[in-house]
Image (cartoon, rainbow, N blue to C red):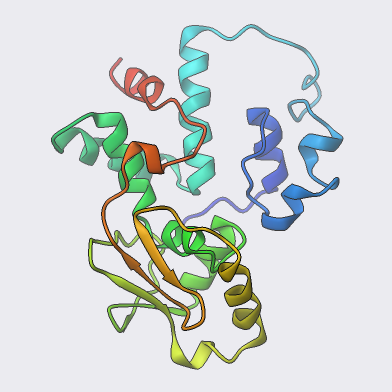
Length: 208
């Protein structure tokens, strides 16, 4: 399973904004953006004016890094979004939101998408009663996502359940924090997706 294994804070600094890749740390003074709000590397503090292509590229990279997707997989999502009816950019974000690791994060059972990806990969979640350990699994309307019974008693998941009880899930998901379950009520609309991404720039980039 290919994934980025480098320092997460470096990605936030490269994009010049918090991508919330490290969960609770991102809300503290230890956040890299708070301590060093400039791009990484020897010439990180040099200000450069981006070209039109550079602006589009940064937007695509930002989307990839928020959802933890590598380039080939991201391109596959875009091609799938192009084949679906409706606006390609919105279709792309909707596909990314439907990833199981993102849904687990949205339900509040992980402090970050990276943590959610790890928990799913280790087989701690079921979909409609069957164990699914593929983070990229696309959920459908009516799917019930739950913490596996043998994992519920672990201290880690008791803490996560308490955290989920204090978080408000998006409108397209319902969550029962006490029983550690959630359900997909609908596919997310653009208004439900609060990530700071201008998807039209990604469409323009891939349309060149």
